[in-house]
Length: 321
Ligand code: UDP
Ligand code: MG
Image (cartoon, helix red, strand yellow):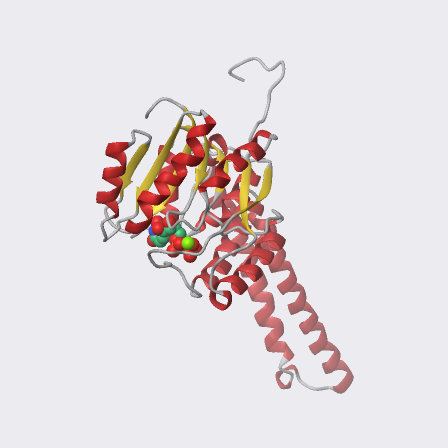
């Protein structure tokens, strides 16, 4: 890996041939005056157009540009993960290649970070995308994510965000999880700030996502909640549900008994007996799943030496302990 730098800008690229040269010029104009050492990391996510040729021209003319090209299209999250893994900068900034994010915001993100934050999240307060298919689902999704995860941001989906590299190094990204990086970062104790950023309409190339993404975001939210809140204690999640179900089952059982002794009706003429048996069994199963999950969690943490805590500072602690 190259020598450590001040700043890495990571750009996921999928069929963005018209945007790349103007984007690179804008990034250079925004970053060069800062006088920092930097790189612009383009990850070509299996583009089928001329994106890679154009990137090679850019890299031939500017040694700050680096390129990694995927063998096929692996998705924006994979591209960002690859960029983050290979970036040498102390600070890593993600930026879309479609020119909707404005590189002129980069210095502002860095200023905010210098106030003592580990993550600065862009908020597209003037978002320029289709209202019905993008804006409304996104408002609902953002509110929900903020509530469920307790990490309060207005715009998880905005790619333009700045991270300290040591925070990012701890985050493993799967599927389409890049919008949840701040939530994972909080798990490591990262200090997170939000900053309003500019957003511009797409003028070249086509948007790669539509309404279909919404339900995936909801499903991902379940995973993230389980992983961030219950990874070290899954029995509390499954067992809690199990207790509730068993309790409901017992209530249904009591109802059948009361009806039997008050009206003399045999249990087989009362449908609640079926519910009682069904709910109680389901509750027991949930508790057993929780126990299995506890075993899995131990394997998960111990097989690869993953810690269950992260240390910020040590005072008067001899090394090696
Ligand atoms: N992108 C990618 N791989 C994909 C889809 C998209 O690298 O499979 C890139 C794309 O080139 C762009 C960014 O991810 O730089 C965001 O894509 P897009 O603008 O289509 O998404 P939107 O801004 O509409 O959320
Ligand atoms: Mg876009």
